[in-house]
Length: 84
Image (cartoon, rainbow, N blue to C red; front, top):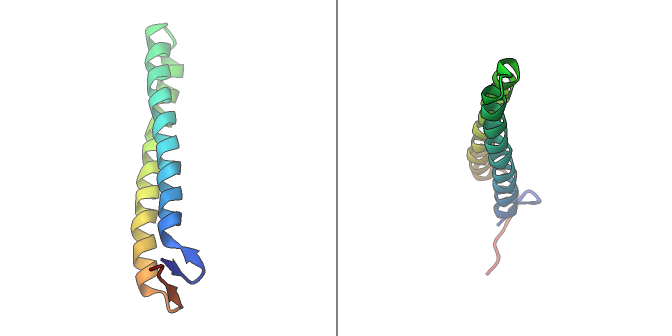
């Protein structure tokens, strides 16, 4: 479905792709943080865990964006086109 020139289904899929990418980066950051700590680099491990927490925040914001997309699409005062 398109609303105001935006294919909302495709837009949501793109948000999911970004989320998948961030999820992978978070996992790598987590692993590297533990590797650094195990190797005796506690400050590096701490910074990587801080980065991991920020990536968690990014994922939460992406989830909020998906919810907002649905809300905005419903409230949009434009033409809707549905494929049949």
